[in-house]
Image 1 (tube, helix red, strand yellow):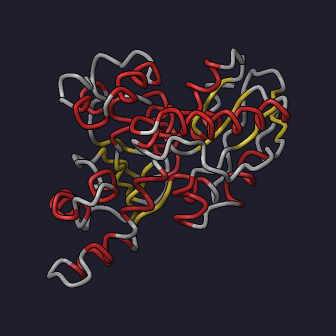
Image 2 (image 1 turned 180 degrees about the horizontal axis):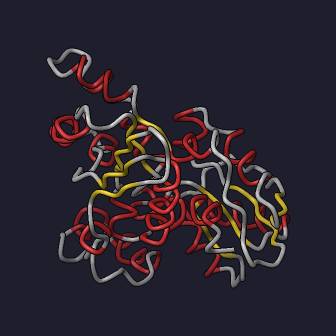
Image 3 (image 1 turned 45 degrees about the vertical axis):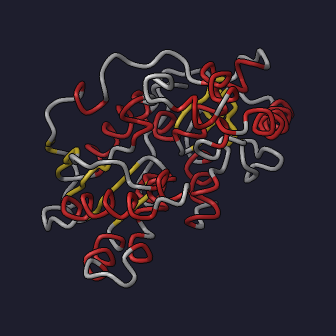
Length: 284
């Protein structure tokens, strides 16, 4: 894929070397594989729009499946939105115009009065979607962006007020948590995932040293600066080893890619899971 997009010319040898970071890609995007787009849930009132980020759509599809199962328990209705990229990657590389074009397309979809809340299971997406008013600060879309941003929820925020699903038919497991930068620093989400994990029967939560330190992925940083990224990742994996955890939990698909690579490279048996997978009880 990197070669087809010509990205090797942009990032150089480090990008080619980093192709090993991502394991085999699913044959179809999440949205093409999961049908229908609208579901009746068992919740009483909440109408949920599910914003599928690029990471879940293309790579971490099991996390998306777990999220959808949970959303159907929480919401009265769940709609998988036909959104595009949130615009964060373009914005991070300084292409503000491209980011605004993507954001404008999303505003047209996310502004629908059919949804009480817009939920995403990517903390990076959630953080950037909440910043749309800043993107359109001096723009005609500003008020629309404010309305949309007020309805954005990181999936961790939506799980927190609801009773977690028990881990069923599972042996007791030890779990630890990695704070994505866009969750802890970008949204101030710190205590919620720990409360969720600590309340799941059959799961022992252990805090990881430097849990809120970056994993070194940082979007495409792991591709553009492979060697330095791996040094950061190695420190994270050494801290993971200290916990003795069976599963490493996080809420960002991009972090999952980086952490999974580190686990494989260090030969660990620790499993990497999105927090929705753990709450849904399918990966413990």
